Length: 259
Image 1 (cartoon, rainbow, N blue to C red):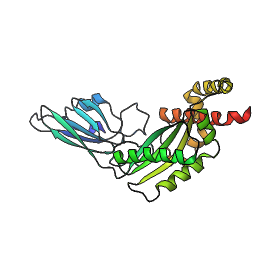
Image 2 (image 1 turned 120 degrees about the vertical axis):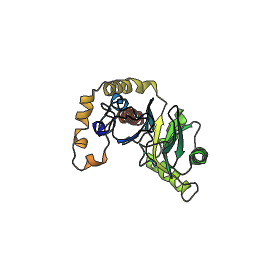
Image 3 (image 1 turned 180 degrees about the vertical axis):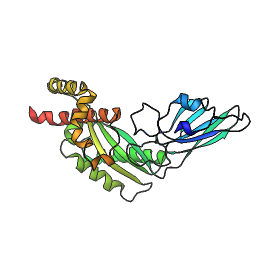
Image 4 (image 1 turned 90 degrees about the vertical axis):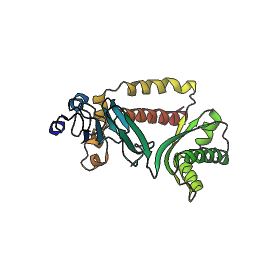
């Protein structure tokens, strides 16, 4: 599409390019109207306003090449503050002022937990953390990670499935303002016993060494499904990291019962 943009010839006029596309070679998002920075720079424009990528980022300063991102996160993978840029443009300088617009903030919150023996202790600690979070971010949809720091706390959480803890915290915040919805809870056990280390490290070592081709083979049934693929973004390094963490937590949860 960049080939359809004329080269700027009038040095006294402001030339602004509005382009919906992605940087060539970046496969973390669906490729659309690919371009390179040199393509854009060759047009001698004063500013490039880009769309398609929902992550706010500035690809170049001279000239400014900017993705403002989207004005509202759509799901849990579009975290952080969303909005647009107000741009003051001159022939010698460019000022970008970010204007937040999100009605609801998608985010992630980690709560370190130690010395937890009763449900009310955990609920009180989680309530304080989420209240502090929403006072800063406003209405939020949150992925909550419980960081288990000691054996006794690990034993406490092992008494009930994750779904029970999720239901309890949702009930606690039901109807409260500002709005907060805990989308999911991940319980991350940071305590490893020596007896579980050998098997755990062996399995994780295998998973970490899988090539991209092996991951594509493993996920093939899902990503080749005609109906499912419409709802899936391209598999990213972040997705891979999450899967590896899930494997570790599953092993840590199951190993005690396998002794």
